[in-house]
Image (cartoon, rainbow, N blue to C red; front, side, top):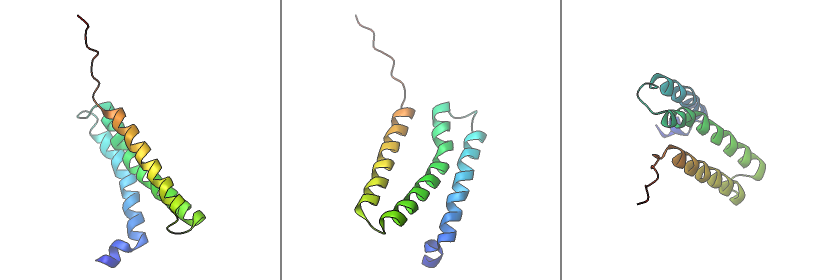
Length: 98
């Protein structure tokens, strides 16, 4: 089982399936989900594929397990996660002043 999980073809196939399935799922659930959540859900699979390509490119350029590559991926992941979280948070109406 470990050989199957560590097989790059298996892993890349899973990323491709995720990149196709999440936009399709967001489209199929458009009547049940708010637009903001649909956008984040639909973009999740392609975003994971983008991070995988970015990770492989940085590892190839800087070398395996380099600190700069890990920090770059960490920064991109945290920044995009925060952006997505702020985007889908519920809007709070402005309080009325008495």
